[in-house]
Length: 294
Image (cartoon, rainbow, N blue to C red; front, side, top):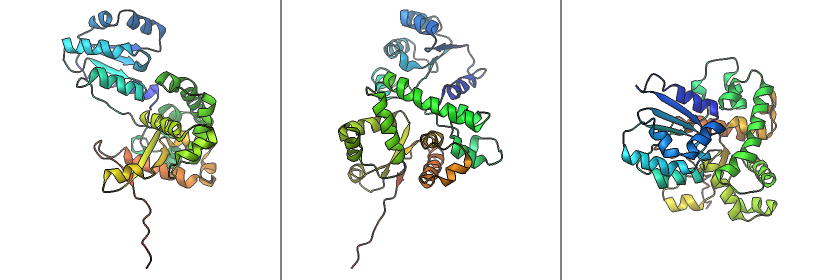
């Protein structure tokens, strides 16, 4: 779920390291979108010896089938770098068309250990979160305003484009409820009744947000897989800055005085730990264990 600055920075680090030319295509630019949409295969074939970096690939679903054809004719690795917002639809498309031809890399928000020291670094990082634009903002007000705009854009534009068909107003209400449930055991049925939808719909909302890395879902540890899946998980908004914006936390003083400061801090610490774990490690939480009294 990183912003475009993070993706652009990743792409720029490849310059001078790949040993060949690099071409950038941004599907949010009308010119690039039209050029690729009109004759995708022919256009990309002209740059077969370059690294083609394509931003916002979710905007052009036809891209994946064409890429499969191009890669089957020339299986040299490192021909394309695809950057986009993750969603169940996007992951399904890449799995259907590019299985065995693609490697995924998840970009997490900025980790505490990646940041240069500054006064009150820990508290500022907890408050602002790890989105680069939010973190690098000149003032706390600008950081907060960017996160507000990000949430609005995500709900009103990105989610429908990524395949979630729902009423934006209802979904904003769902996000508020999700914020209040941050760090607590998850129960879809009461949320569904409050919103006037089924528990199944609420689970679909949550699954979509988890797939797009907006939330992190932790299941209770159990030795058997079946027991993990039937027990209630805990749900956390992945980025602490987004959570604090949802909580209307605007400065370092208010974050420690907020009623949900404890669960906000818990989620922040968990995300810092998860980002340090090897990819093959699955995190869990330990449920409360009560001994039977005699």
